[in-house]
Image (cartoon, rainbow, N blue to C red; front, side, top):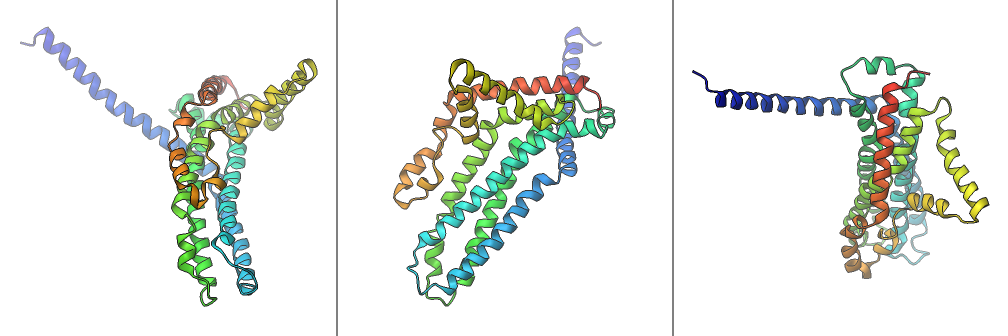
Length: 309
């Protein structure tokens, strides 16, 4: 005979067993939603690759010209420092532009081509759909751009070594003084924290405008901040909001400087700044994350009730 306590325990066990597959099912839907975004928007990974190929071609021309005049100039390892830093800046800038474009178009595009009717017929919640779209600029694009940058800089070092063979320049010294590992750590810090967490309210605002705007989402994304800056300047003669937007794009003040951290005599200073305790105590970070959460919640609600254009 089954006692009431046994019935309760069996019921709780069944509920817990059912909750585990539900979690896996939700994670599977989330991952498939991300794959769907990558299928539809190949620009998010093709553009950084194209930028890397263009930069490698330009660097090859640069290193060939340097090889021709290698005996007429005083060569030092700083001669090659600028192209390595510039390659990271180029790919990071490309990643930011791609993330902004994707955030503005992803929700507007499915309303424009009416594919939202099909996607809403699938058993995927609006929250899952919006979070998967937010994951692309916050996580995927920074990590993918970081990987592309590391491969690009490794190929740059390899090309430098091959072209400079037989020129009298020590290629081993080039690898030793390139600070390849150090620059990679700085870049990973920058891509994950600045391009991810710090830019979260920007991407949240873009998603909100993509879900709401009836036409031309880029205009609706730019117009409200522009009007606020103009009204503040005319009425108060201040530029606080403009400074706030500029700081949001430029990054926090406590962010380590790449060019300064690459100096050989500042290794200890770099190591102390690499630990992001200053970043996580920045009030602007947490304020931005709260604003981003509000934007995302509004975007989920808009997608639930917004129909095709």
